[in-house]
Amino acid sequence: PLGGLHIEALRLLARLPEQPSEQVAMLKKAVALASSSKDATAQAWRARLLIDLGRAQFNNGKPGAARLKLNEAITTAIELNDLAARDEAAELVTWLEQHAEVDG
Image (cartoon, rainbow, N blue to C red; front, top):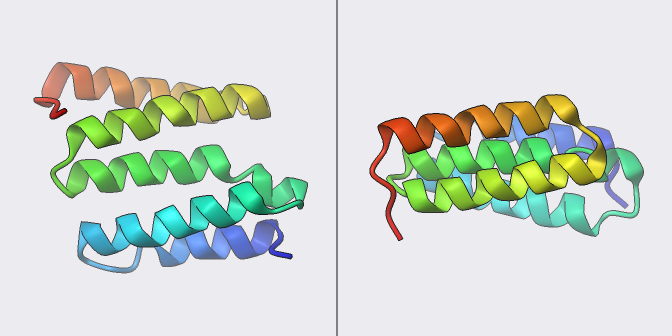
């Protein structure tokens, strides 16, 4: 099973592609792997991965999808008691609401 270090490595690797669409694809896979892992440290990466996915969605021209992922990150962070991730995702949602035209 994939542990926390594996998930963290996948998160870092997802930052390498220049194309946001490639980052989105890699982060979706990392979220799925973290979510399906039985390892608590792997599960703990879910909120951070969702934040990264929200950013990548925004950079891919999908602010509505970004906001959905960021809202999911907030919920996940609360479940994980990751207050820093919750606050980061909430700040990004606020920024999106103030600066971006949100698609459907």
